Image (tube, rainbow, N blue to C red; front, side, top):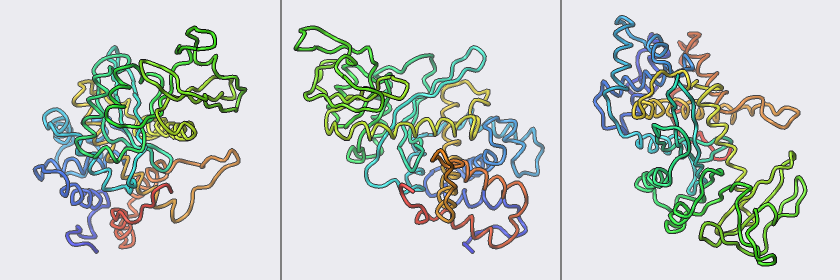
Amino acid sequence: MMNGLPPSKGSFPMMAAHLLKCELKRFLPWHQARIDCLAQLIVAMVQVRTVNLTQLALAFDALVQRESVYQRVKRFFRHHQFETDLVAVLVTSWLDLGKRWVLCLDRTTWQLGRTPINGLVLSVAYAGVSVPLMWTVLGKKGNSSTEERIALIERFLRRFPPERIECLMADREFRGHQWLSYLIRRGIAFRLRIPNNTKTHNRQRNARLPVTRLFSIQSGETMILNRPRRLWGHTLYLVGTRAPSGEYVIIITTHAPEQALEDYRQRWQTECLFAAMKRRGFNLEDTHITDPDRVARLIAVMTLALCWCYKVGLWLNQQQPIVIKKHQRRACSVIRLGLDTLRRVLLNGASQTPQIRDWIHFLFDKKVIIANT
C-alpha cells in the first residue's frame, strides 16, 4: 500500500479524497486547506453527479454541520481565485495524449433564468471524446469574437509549444479574415467548416457563387476542388461531402486537403464532451452560479472529476471492452463507464477490502492508459 494511505477503517470517499489530494499537491501551489476542499469537491461531484453546490455539500465527508460545509464550498468558488489553466497541466499528466494533439474549439451554452451562460472551450480529441484543456466563460450571449478566440489560443501556447498542435477543428462560427490570418501566422494547421452560403469567385462564370455550387456530389460522396480558392482574403483548399440528409459539409484548410475531412470527423468528440458535462454526466446546467469567473472555476473542478472518471473508464475498458451493439456503437461511453463504476464504489460501501484500495491507487498510475484505446 502507498505511503500515507489513510487507515483501512476510513470510508472509501475519504481514501479517494486523500489520494486525490496527494496527486493535486504535485501541481497546485495552494494552501493545504484549499487542496483538501478541491479533492473533496471532486469526490462529491462523482458521488452526486451534479455541480449543484447544495448537493455537493451534502456529499462532503465532514463532521461539521452541513450549513458550514455549504458555506465552505461557496467560499471556494467565490473567493479562491486560481489560474484555471493549471488544470491543463493536470489533464496532460493524467492522460497519455501523445506528442501531437488534435484540438477542438467550440462553445457550450445554457440559460439560467434570463442570464445566458456561454463557454468557449478548447479541448483535445482523445479516445472517443475530447478533453477540456482551457476555456473562457464569455459573460454574454451569442458567438465568440475573434479577439476572444485568439486570447484562448494564446493561453494554450503559453503552456504548450505550437509543435504540439496537429491541427485545429472548429465549426461554422469560427471564420473570418482576422481569425484565419492569426492561425496562418501562428503556423496552426486547421480544418474549419464554413457556412454553405459562403461565396467565392468562380473564374468560369466570372462571378461570386456559393461554395456549394462548386461541388457536384450526391449524398455520401466526397470531392476536393482541384485548385485552392480565395476566401476571406486567403488562398485555401476546399473539401466537401454531403450527409445522408443531403446537407453539404464544406471544410477549408491550408494543407493536405485529402486528409481534411477524415480529420474533421473527430470534431464530433466535442459533442460527446458536452453531453458528459451536462445531461449524461455532471449536469453542469444545474448550477445557480452565473458570475463568469466562478463558472470558469466550477468547470475546472468538473474537468478534473471528468478526467478521473475517464481514466477509470479507459482502464476498465482495457480489462473488459465495452460491448458493441448492433448499430456499431458502444453500449455506453468510456466516461459513463468510469463514472458509474466510481459512483457504485463510493456509494455502496464496498471499499473496505484491500483489493479496492489497491485498485483506486493503481488508477493514478499514468502507465495504465493507452492512447487511442
